[in-house]
Length: 186
Image 1 (cartoon, one colour):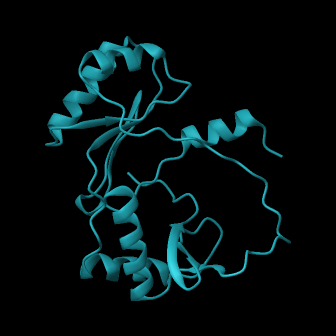
Image 2 (cartoon, one colour; image 1 turned 120 degrees about the horizontal axis):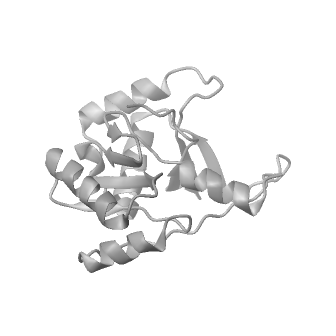
């Protein structure tokens, strides 16, 4: 059984990195996801005791180097409060707050009537996932090339540690999507 601290630590370590992401690891983990994701350069994690102003300067320099005029920064309750103060002093605004929920899964639990979940396997599934991600996260819907890439990834046999996507439906309508933690790539 995981403790609350275990859940918080796992959430702080997790980061979704789709194929084609650019990553710089070190005292800052800085990510630039591919254009189809629609995101900016983002600081995902801080592992440094350097002053907040220096860390922000470093991240801004990387964003500029990578050709982005915006910078996103994911703060956690484990980060030095001086980071939030420094970002606010530079005009940053909070655009999203996330809560982490961890519950033990009961393998004998039954789904509610009308609710189903399955592995993404068809072109229509990929399009449905794209529509959900577009509505929720503002991502670009997948073009034909991206649909082919996802279907190729999803066609691989399931093995331990494999990445795959799920599509949840309610009364036959696609309503949510998700998947396990992908392997990190740099």
